[in-house]
Amino acid sequence: MTGSGNTLKITVRDLHKAFGNNAVLCGLDLDLPAGQSLAVIGGSGTGKSVLIKSIIGLLEPDSGSIRIDGEETVGIAPGEREQINRKFGMLFQGAALFDSLPVWENVAFGLTQSQGMGRRAARQAALEAMHMVGLDDDIADRAPAELSGGMQKRAGLARAIATRPDILFFDEPTTGLDPIMGSVIDNLIVKSVRELGATALTITHDMASARRIADNVAMIYQGRIVWHGPVSEIDHSGNDMVDQFLNGRSSGPIQLQVAV
Image (tube, rainbow, N blue to C red; front, top):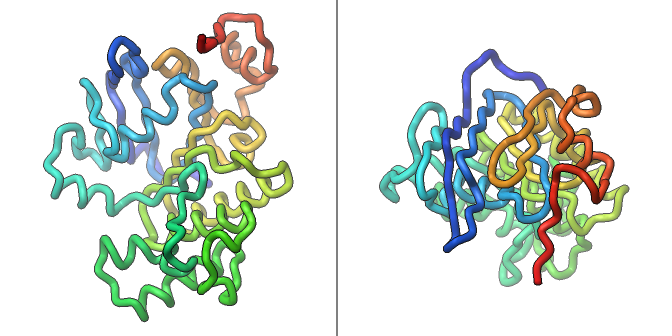
């Protein structure tokens, strides 16, 4: 995966979000060039999920700017938000498949609900997306509960790419998977992003996964990006926080937040 010049697909500036007295994002800045794959790493509770939810419009930031293809999205009207969101595809942490729908209708959900595609065409498009992630036609009419965790994750990935989005979001894509299946899913993510020519943003605490799927890595701590650079340089970042995170050390500049 390579970047395409310096054109920025996503630009985040001075982003703030708090829940009551809990400040989660504290002036976060982030750039994601078109065609690149970025992994945002960090521990639990550091703001990774709040960042991605803010970008896709599930949360409204308290202040700051989020531009998609140069267009400001903070505070825009619902109709404009819907247009922006058509550029997105997302693989949720638990695959988040609808139990009441067969696999193919899950995969085709964005096509039928957001784009108004007819069922016959949507089924064909869903099967094509399923083929891209290694799922055969014979599971199209199965219920999600009949699939293994790895197959459910593949179905979630197929749904994310079925609309052929410009930007793909991956929320902890390897959570709940064994190391081998995690590697399989990561390789499918890389393949899908490359075939679509998409820009990708992944949030993860799994460094093995980040190394496989990302061109660049940004580390978030206490609501800010504390390091951002090529994945090839992360082992020699010169940043004490990154070094502590990579090596899993309990002592260092990152202070564990233990719930009481």
